[in-house]
Image 1 (tube, rainbow, N blue to C red):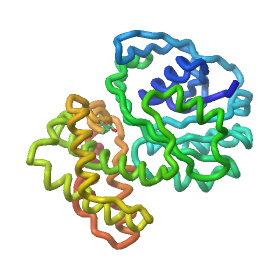
Image 2: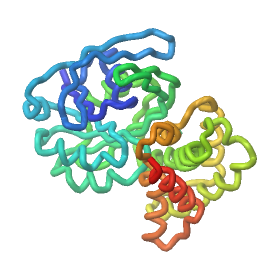
Image 3: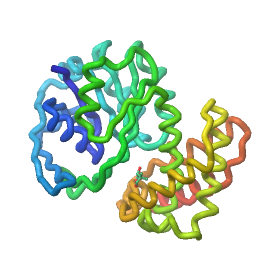
Length: 300
Ligand code: PAF
């Protein structure tokens, strides 16, 4: 039986933990201090069924980390490097890592730290809302894409387990183009909804059209410097489809701003601005969104 740890007990970490447990593999849910969480956690699924999980317990932090076959990291983008550097010394040389967060960038630094371990990257559009620290409500189904990044490939048994446990999940051979497409969605929806305090669906209004077009135009140019070819029209169609499908959602960045928490802007639009800067590509639309979110964050 595979031993799986999930580092990060936020909405995505809890949701994946419940989904693995339902598929018959009870994971260890770890907080950012790498302590296994022992309190029961509840999930109300899309059918309204409430299920409570008692996570696998371990009193010995070092022994637990050393026995893991897979560590799924579900902390926020800006916490990834600290989470990985904290966990690595305790992990066995064969432990595989999976990063699952919004935005791009941290994987470049993580890949350099792995010491021969394998790295998979992923993105999920499943929606979940924390009603309390231990109480989660799934608010939407959505695509989850996973794919190999570097080092040894994920063991076939682990891959099969993840794909059967997470509804709507798929393995993609080229994960980076998939992550860039998700980045485009987040770069348009997240800052605009956070700045204007609106639900995703309100972005269909003409007032936001020029900004969305500007974000995507700059993103396509910056992506090209990374060898990623994207089409502005198809990205735009995808962004407006997500706006329609998640019309009633409060984006994750809007929720962060509403709760006065640091946002993932630096790994989303900020990543585009810094890559643009490195390659002498102007990114005024993305830069204006980054500045507006930083201004909000400074008031927290
Ligand atoms: O970050 C989010 O909120 C989600 O990724 C998305 C797809 C924008 C829906 O709200």
